[in-house]
Amino acid sequence: MQTIEKFNFAGHKAFVRVDFNVPLDEKFNITDDTRIRAAVPTLKKILKDGGSVIIGSHLGRPKGVDAKFSLQHILPRVSELLGVKVEFANDCLGTEAVEKSAALKPGQALLLENLRFYAAEEGKPRGLADDASDEVKAAAKKAEKANQKEMAKQLATYATVYVNDAFGTAHRAHASTAIIADSFDADHKLFGYLMQNEIDAVEKVMDNTARPFTAIMGGSKVSSKIEIIENLLTKVDNLIIAGGMTYTFTKALGGKIGTSICEYDKLDLAKDLIQKAKANNVNLVLATDAKIADDFSNDAQTKFVPVNAIPDGWQGLDIGPDTEKKFAAVIEASKTILWNGPTGVFEFENFTSGSRAVGNAIVKATAKGAFSLVGGGDSVACVNKFGIADKMSYVSTGGGALLEFIEGKELPGIKAIRGH
Image 1 (spheres, rainbow, N blue to C red):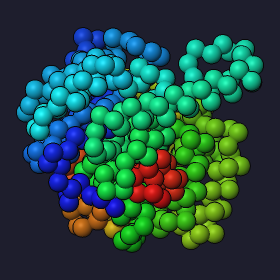
Image 2: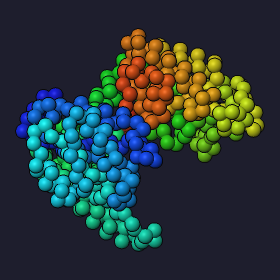
Image 3: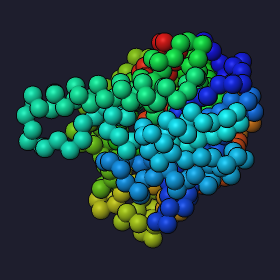
Image 4: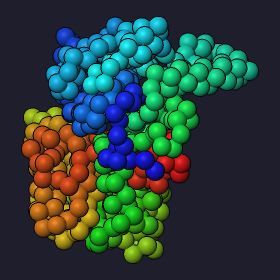
């Protein structure tokens, strides 16, 4: 497989799919440019080699052309970070995009307008009536899939090489993330630095594991993490359950959880997971105490109680000090660590202690030589909030893509380039 490090882009025009889906405020200022900065090394390598770049991305979830989601808002920052004036095409498929791509000279860059202004990017029909018949829906879907292939073919005509550096969208079989790759031979399609780093980090954790391997799974719902937990139970030595899921497990074990978040229809599932952990000799680590509140608020009254003895009218919003020590001891003895999801409502300052303790334990383990991978939006927000992101081995830019990769699913954006 071709790699970006070995490929010489001199004389080439590269279509680079990036993930510039960055947050904007009400005045369209970028509030976090992490995703743009993450793609800069790939774009600079192409330009430095003497190639030119055509940058494609989506922004938000537009239902058609919408100025609110125009990539023009981020153009100045992209130019600033790349150190070159980036041209702009106000339609990714229009005459302007064709002409400006053709006119690019070595060392020049062009940003295309939002790819998702076209329904064909995602291959999903838009504007169908809710009561449309199955036949109408099937026909619309078939037509949009054909449009998707055409869009991918046109985007491919702009360039001589395709580079995918958008890990955040790797789990989507979109025109620009997967289907476009069919128009390039194996020597002219490759991953960018960011994409390759993401793949390497996950494969190091899942396939080349140094033991003990500990995964910390947070999040409010067991149901949204069921596949990833089941896959991890065949891989890890320790599985720490944190966040809102704690109370579903506690309730399944017969505990009192007050008004804590709980999926009452998933109690049997939690029991099954406890049994699967035992069958696989996995140390399932559950909270023993909780910081509870009489209201879902930063200013609520709080106290610490055993996690299985939460009084009526109170809810668990973070782990307690005994659990912090318990989790930290397991983490600090680990050689491979995966963190996905905080231990509590870390958005409230009074309920950050547990997540901070987990983060600090990972920092200590990493300093001693462990490999730590942090992924999933809230975990990334945690390490950024606590100022410890640079003390982790790798912080992923992918949310859904990362989780599906860890679940063992085949990601279309990866398969399109490496063939498996």
